[in-house]
Image (cartoon, rainbow, N blue to C red; front, side):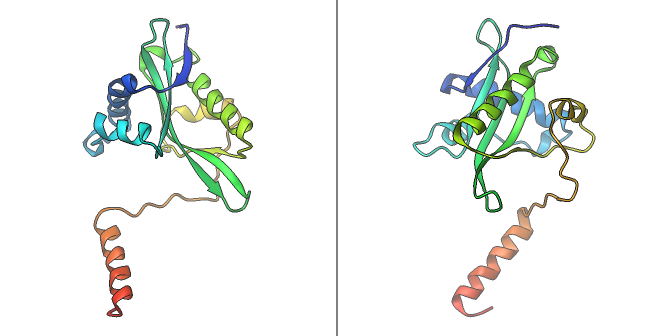
Length: 170
């Protein structure tokens, strides 16, 4: 299916649609019960005076969002410059094959090039069929690098070590 798709920076009025799509993505990734994002949280992250997150939406001919990319700036000590970490990329099933995903990634690649950033990177679940799409645009798997996450109780336990160390009791 071919659509007329345009990519633009997210606006405050896009927040409800983007939140709905984040929840759709979580459902697709078999983790709907782990997604707790609200419109208030996303709006604050995107539109604060110093945003924690940036967003672009792919919109159809009626300016309705059919996909999104949420990203933030990171810094590579090896490259000595900034890059973009893509937190989430999603295109609604009815708009897949329309070029929306490519257009969203192309917009982020253009930001990287315009700003002198050297990397656009992301992680994905190993079973996600988007791997073929990513390979087709030239992305490579960083096979030697493993993503780690510290969350929940282990995060709090480690934080307690810092607290004890600062008081001399640890």
